[in-house]
Amino acid sequence: MSVRAQLTLAILISGRGSNMVAIARACAAGQIHARVGLVIADRADAGGLTSARELGLETLTVAREPGGDRAAFEQRLAAALDARRPDVIALAGFMRILSAPFVDHYLGRMLNIHPSILPAHRGLHTHQRVLEAREAHHGASVHFVTPELDGGPVVLQSRLPVQPGDTEATLSARVQATEFIIYPRVLGWFAQGRLSWQDDSAWFDGKPLDHPLLEEFSAPIN
Image 1 (cartoon, rainbow, N blue to C red):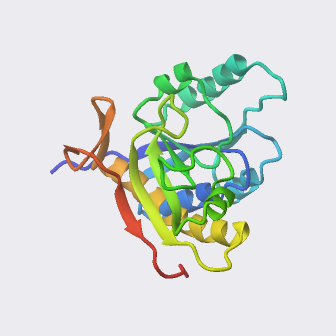
Image 2 (cartoon, one colour):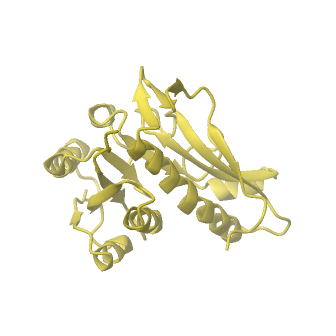
């Protein structure tokens, strides 16, 4: 029986990099059969860069100045990625909208986590929007990245109840705790070969994934 080679993973961040840390720790613990080859931030002051260095990871800043040219930024970002030849790219709080040509270059091997139960609440301020809509549940979605913003095939979602008295901060914290579980899980499936991209869609265990997998979180996560 052949043993799958360990994958090389690149992680893109813009802020604190909390999902990046969860992914890196899962790799170190053997939960994801991959090594983090590079952490890239689009801001030199991203707090996640310090966390990545403390974990012994290679880091790089590829910044786009306000009003700067997106094409030039994406060319530099692609050059940095292609130099490491990652098998999979994880967007972990990467707050840039990427162009269709850039996404197409990595189609099928770039994943993202979004703090809502997609297709509901694409874009920003999801926790506030869920509270304003008085919805009963909230969660997060891990999906393949396609040119459509937050529109790629969803692999796994978390769902948890919105509690009476929830604020944007408390709801965000509970959703984020689920992200630290489901994102490494999906990346682990990809590294195992259980999750793949075929015929412009997500496949899981050799079959098209017609509906996202769902994990319920009815109790607080310790």
